Image (cartoon, rainbow, N blue to C red):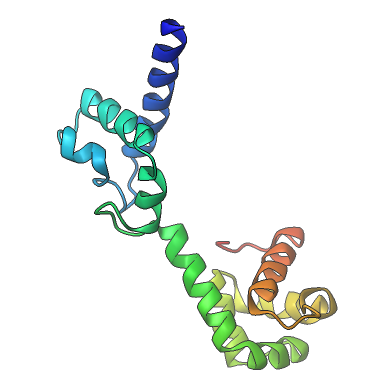
Length: 155
């Protein structure tokens, strides 16, 4: 049993160690940094293990608590949902037309080429537009269509 426990701790620390050394701005935070702040292989392993063992540390680090900056993925998702909700009616009209400033800005927020995105939005309008008029459902449908149409976007 002890061998399995040691193996699990080592495996988790190595997987987190690789992530810890990334260029992401959310690095350098979490409870593990209070225990061992040195940027060494040993420090990375100790921090990774500590951050995996303490309940809520990983989610806190991703969402911007635990003395961390919000992860880029979380920031992008929040901006996309905010833009979709605040410009819902304009987006519906411009998606149907296949052009417009709100649609161009939406493409930018999603990290897409505006021309390619506008064309896809117009062609796939019936599939994208939710029947229950829900902005988060619209965003999910748009992302699904981006993926199924292999658009080169950041989502």
